Image (cartoon, rainbow, N blue to C red; front, side):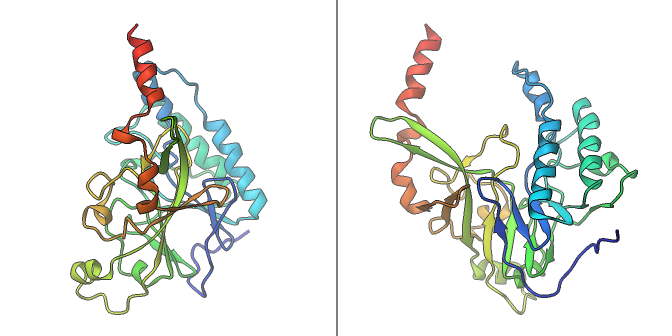
Length: 286
């Protein structure tokens, strides 16, 4: 079966998969921040978790089947290690990619953790695996990029830009100080003036809506957007204030709208700590 590598015609609305950190653009499944091999890093800290790669393969194959996707786009940080490749990554990443590429074409937008990923790409697969430039590319009017670099001007002419990188969560405290953390989707807007300054040659600007995806890998933790600032969020788009942070909207994975970042700040734990965390620390000391 010959699956086309890219399709730029028309426009397709991104559709999150309910209760999952994944979305579709037409017949394309999109995931971000897989961090395969994180179990090795955790073991170095004394946290021993067996490889979860089989569970992750099963999840992805289930997604592909449920949405009838013909391709999958991985929005960066397929690897977990940054400056090296761990033994677990050398084992699990080719296995993961081979298993997925037996069912669908795979496109990878590399992230800041993906140095050396090209050496882990299996060739003996039914469909191809292609690594694209880190500045992103578009499918059906939807721009796709990891988020650790400035996007290409092509993406700024799209209707949507979808990215990962920050692993967005929201941390909420009840009146007693008990805290819950939930992965969320973040929907936001760009600041046109920042891009006009960055790209004097920009020309047509579509004012794309921005979607920041929750991390696929539940072990990586996340950044609480209702506690974050431009300085603590990752990537040049935040450090250069190219995204409207306070007006950004947060949604749970089931689609429940929580509010804007500005509104949710008042429900964040005071001083970044909950009473439960404090009591646990006291118990550990004793």
